[in-house]
Each structure stands twice: as C-alpha cells, then as structure tokens.
Image (spheres, helix red, strand yellow):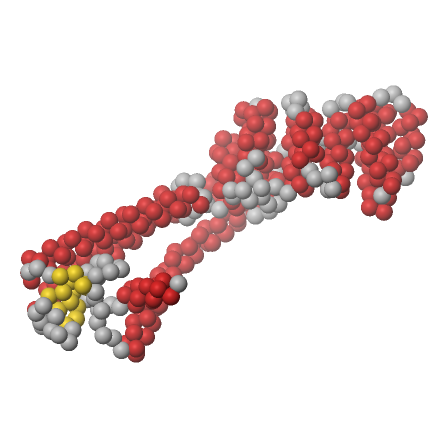
Length: 408
C-alpha cells in the first residue's frame, strides 16, 4: 500500500513538473522524454549549455503544442461521436478507451520524433529517470500552477455547456407561448442535439413539437430514445412518456405493436411493485380499449405471483385493479367473484381500507347490475354509502385516449 502511495506521489510530481532539461551535479545532461512512469529522461554524459540544448527544447515545445491540439481534437471527435449514439456506461467506457488509444498513439509518435531528433543532433543517449533536484518551495509553485491549469480547463468545459441552458430555455419559451412556435422549437433542438448530448427533457420537448406538427414518426423516435437514455431508471415523467408511446405506436403501427414495444422497453426498467402495478394498469386499459386484451389477466396473475405473500397491501390493491379490468372486459361474474373476496378482506381492515371499501361496493354493484341482479346491485350501492347522485361516477370506465403534455 505504501509503495502505491509513493508511486502516485511521484507520478503526480512528474505531471506537475514543467522542466524539460537539466544538468545534474555530475555534469550529465538530461532531456525529458514522453514516458510518464519509469526512465522518463534521455541522459547524455556530457554537459550541454542552454544555448546548445535550446534547439532540442524548441523542437520539444513545438511537439507539445501539436500534441495538445491533437488531444483536444481527439476529445472533440470522441465527444461528438458519443452524443450521437446511445449514451450509457459501456459507450462512455468505449469512448474513453478510444480517446486513450488515439491520444497515446499521438504521444508515441511525438516520442519517436523527439528521440530521433536528439539522436541526430546529440548522438546516442541512455534512458534514465528525469529527476531534477527541486526545492519544496519550487515544488509547491509547480503544484499550484498545475492546479491552476486544471481549474482553467474545468472552467472552459463548464463555459462550453452554459449555452445548453440558454438553448433549452428558448425551446421552453417557444413551446409555452399562447401560440407556440413548434417548428422553431424543432430547429432549435437540432442545434442543441448537434452540440450537446440530449437530455430526456429535450427529447420530451422535441417529441411534443413534432407531434403538434404531425411528425408522428419523429415524435415516437424521440420518446423511445428518451426512455432508452434513462437506462434502468424510472421516474414520474415516464408515465407520460409511456402513455404517449402507446398512442403513437398505435397510430403508426397498430395496437398490438404498441403493446409489444411497451413490453420491450418496460422490461429494461427497474420498477417498484407500485410502479409495476401502475404501468400494468396503463397497459391493461389500453389493451382492453383497443381489443388486444388476451394477456391482461395473465399479466395480473404473473405480477401477483411475483409479490411476496407478506406484502398483503400491494396484493390487495393489485387485485382491486384486476377486478376493475374484469369489469371492463365484460367478465362480470368473474369480477363479482373477486369482489366477494376483496370486500370481506377490506371490512376486516376497515381502518385501513375505508375509502377503498366504498369503491369496491360500488363497482360490485355495477357488475351485479350488468349481470341482471338489480336487487344485489342496489344493496351494494346502499352499502357503499355513496350519494345516489354521485354513484355513476364510480362505475369502471375507460379514460379518454389522447396525447399527454408534460409541463416544461
């Protein structure tokens, strides 16, 4: 462990040290080479004066300038490639590997050119450590200069991303006007996406603008890309993204393709039980409403089977959703049978499920009415203690399908 600490300290000192040439006490001349670790000096057993060493140092400084320029160009190239691909841990890692390979390839070229120059002008050299004697005061100055340089680069990188905030703000303004400028927002998003990596919010704004200009294919692509960009993460805004994805897939490719795409993307997300139940609710409503409901009950059974038996609360709520879907599918007797289990369970725990009990009674009442049992229906409506003028609002029903707009 101590050895590693010493190595890191030595490496850091080498990086901070700006010296390129020195003469030791024995009269040996040392030129710094491009190696970062061991034997990073070219040693000559004769003493060179500064004017004699000057032509080599000038050549080295020119090589360093070209190397810095090449390093920045490689970084920009890798950056622009990355932002136009799917950014994830693996692509970032690949980008770093490519940058390191290209940069150190350029560094190797500079090293070869410099060694040939020295050999041509000064003759044969010996590889040794480049270790000039430096006072602690001077070392501190070098460290401070190195920190300043790193800070300068960090500030430059931050300044590079400042316009991204301005561009995204202009997009928001265009979309939130009383008469939104959708085409202008799309054009601005093109500028943004050329220079900066697109965030999920940028994808959302661009998808909305494209939808409103009837570029449904483009809007769908943006929603897919935005969801993929978030990886396994899932958040509140993803409910809207998935709802719009279903709508656009259906409009372009049909309801079954919409369900297939939904399943493909949602399986890549890490969801809590509550989030799984909400997403299953969304998919099931869509499936039943669009006559592709073959697997709705299977999906509910699989979700219930995946939940720990001790998690009675989530099992209760998911079974409530299942009964609701059975009603929408017209399977009233099956719905009533499930309500007959849920209602006694809720009665035993009335302190927890008082509000839910009202809805369960009302929903079972409507199921009984649909089955021709008017007496049983009226009994359930009375047991629900819901005002008869409001009872119709408790009947299971489909929500209107439409494009959902998030707040930007």
